[in-house]
Image (tube, rainbow, N blue to C red; front, side, top):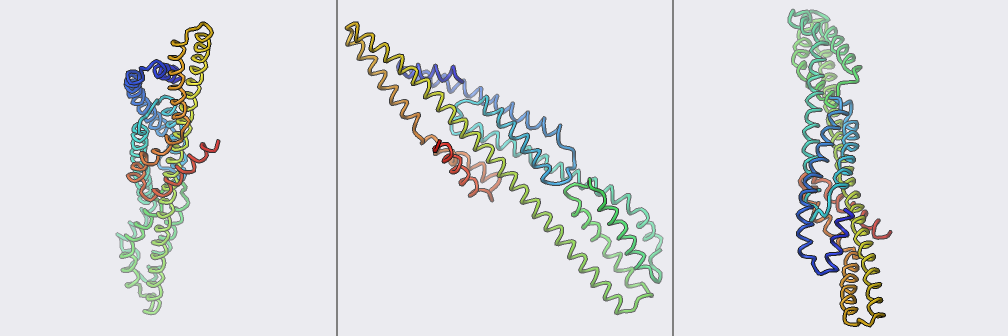
Length: 336
């Protein structure tokens, strides 16, 4: 990056900027493609290493993803150069999000598979008793409830069910509602008033479970949004830092060239070569203009315009958050 910046500023001072610009763009295209490839490869490799499916919570998955994405973005930023319109960073953001979604789906599927298998093992006695008609006897409904409570208790004791644990349990309980109602109706140990009370109690428990699953899903969606916020924040902060570093490097190179040109100009003046000195003066003037352009903060402005399409596609609910984050990140570096 340092060599490229030096060659670029020297080309400007010699009046060869357009030709040099083409060479730099060609080189940056190759470097940025490689940067995206390496960064995405790192994210995938590290996630495969670190994530044990199913994760116990959504936060656990998102924390691991954040860690791996931070490393991937660092790899990209270290290697990328002159990513015009942030095209390659957008590509990386989209690719990481796509891979993250694939892994999230895998995490959900692993949780469902584990929970289904767990319930299959826990319900062997229950299913056999239902098939044998063991609960279609006086007092059978109470026995059925006790067995169901036992299954739910054992199921909830397992801490490795993953993020779909409550949803799978609700589905299981729903599947047994018809059976439970049949057993309740046929239970001659209960009068009609008691049966009605038990039916209302079962309905209330079902609604409570439904609300719990809904709340868990809302919480997990919020955790996903938090993960998206973290992802966007990582990209914005590192991008602004990267642009600031590139600007500083370019400015330093220009200042060095200006100093050299001034010394050469002064030497020519002392030697009486006024005409040649004027040529150096013109080059110095061009370099000073270039330095002013580098020092301008207008280069920050396109960041949100260029990256917002990624936010709209991947996390539309975070659109306003993303715009606000960009403003804060830019303000932080402008005030330095």
